[in-house]
Amino acid sequence: MATKLEAGPRPKHVQLSDVLAELATRDLGPGAAIPSERELMATYDVSRATVRKSIDSLVAGGLLEKIHGKGTFVARPRVETHLHLASFSDDMRRRGLVPSTRLMRVDEERPPPEVVKSLRLGARGTAWRIDRVRLADGQPMAIEQGWYPRSLLPDLDTEDLTGSLYTLFAERYDLLIDGAEQTLWGESAEGATARRLEASAHTPLLVFRRVSSAAGRPVEHVVSRYRGDRYQVHMTLSAGSP
Image (cartoon, rainbow, N blue to C red; front, side, top):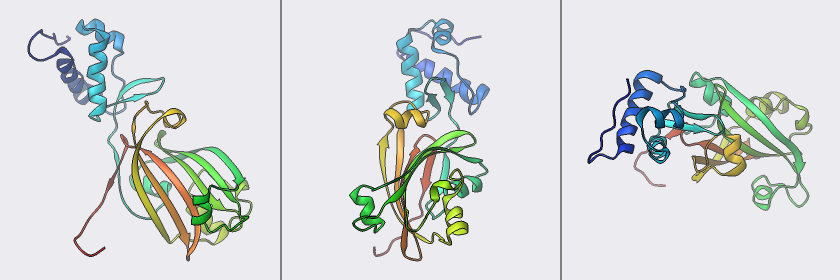
């Protein structure tokens, strides 16, 4: 039986948020769909605006997530990572998740100046551009745009690029990734990025720019955009001189 929403000092959208939060945590569980807006309007005799305001507050709080074209679902717990040097595939497997990849693009190009500099490509060097969507247990977690020097990685476009590139580099090219410089910042998902991550517009993103090397030679310049509602980072800090 539905909980009756009363007129009074607590707005109806707040009351409905409480009802939906209890439904999500007690009856549904992670990954389950909540009732549609139309069903909620009929069940609780409220307007569409009230329903949307209630849902949006729970999405902002991380309890619910909207998946473009599918509906609203109870959010799965965020995957937590410690900052360390590892491939996405290895990172997900350590957490008991199954990694997979959607390969979107592989091309040989002259990269932007920033990438030319970080990969030390010189005046004429080219690189492989590899765009991929990375998934954990079938759910889009991150989208990557990576650049890799063609001179170090000949015929890379003929290899299987759906798994760990770090494993491929070590086994096929004898290039063991042993160091990296990484920068982190925040963005919000828009346009094609949001669609490929199956995220609603303005979903928060954690963005990592990593330049990885093997024995001092730059091998990778990659920018990875992780869904902030599915991924978080843990860091241990200590006092000391920089």
